[in-house]
Image 1: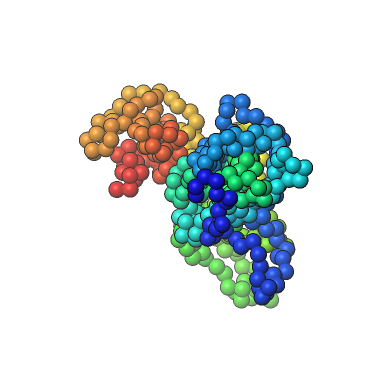
Image 2: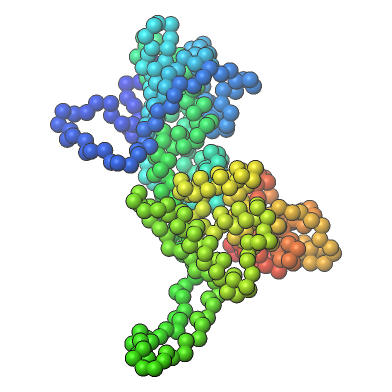
Length: 443
């Protein structure tokens, strides 16, 4: 577009139409469930960024950069920023591909202002969901209202310069006009507070995204479960009831053998008429795990745990942790009660599933191991042609891999994005550090 043009006459192809044909059939009755594909946010209070940056998060600032990279008139852009800082933007409504608000200018009547952007296609969403469900730290970040850089890089979630198409009822021919610029700046504040607003702009609501992630996680959990349970001895009902007609009862059958592992509860479907599926899952899982320990050891597995260890154990007992709204509430409440973040809890859950209390200790307690297996690990790794690891206390690290030596004599594998120092437990602990690294590298 050249300077002085009124505004674009066409909107992105994926954006919804603004009019309805007279022959369009009437809409179906609304479903009883809440539809989060249309969200309206109240007017934001005036605010001036103390550091000169309008947004607080990296994705909010990327949104602002897309606006500023498109602007043809910096003076109008500056006035729009001032309008936003002074609270001239009324309530903002967000739907897929569209952001709408009334913006107050120099005239008494506010102007209707819109921002249009392209929605993502089904293939892009499939790629995004597969990447988000593949790593627990990505899900934990989303639940903690954070967007990992790796997810944005997969699908181009954030708009590039030129992706935002402004439209306004004012007579200003600027691109964008100051009212559209003000709306863009205020929208960045919404993205700071809740990145799911960005997902809605790109075409998917929060409920739909979490439901898709839940299905992927349930399928992966089912694949990881052990095979069919062994056949257990039974007594036919006919044989059990026959002695009742005689003079006595037969001796009781021998006790059933204790299974090697506690059973996993079924995946309870969401039903508004049924109890909370998360509560049922946790109750069943807790009962099975504690009963198994009592049967095999005769002791209470919870009595010796600290409150933090017990919270981690409780969250780890649920195979779908961190996905449904109920589980998000569980993570939020458990972490808040112990002055931690949901991300802290998700990382601790991964460590607990890797090695139980010993795995959690490896995550949280650096220590200085004595001479022996730790000192022999680096030469063994070099001999196996693995990258050089740098030592620190009980840890050996590269830019993306880390080995931690536990007090139990086992090596625990960790991974991080390149140079992020954001380590997450991976794989199964082993006595051989070369085997752990080989598993992490997928060889």
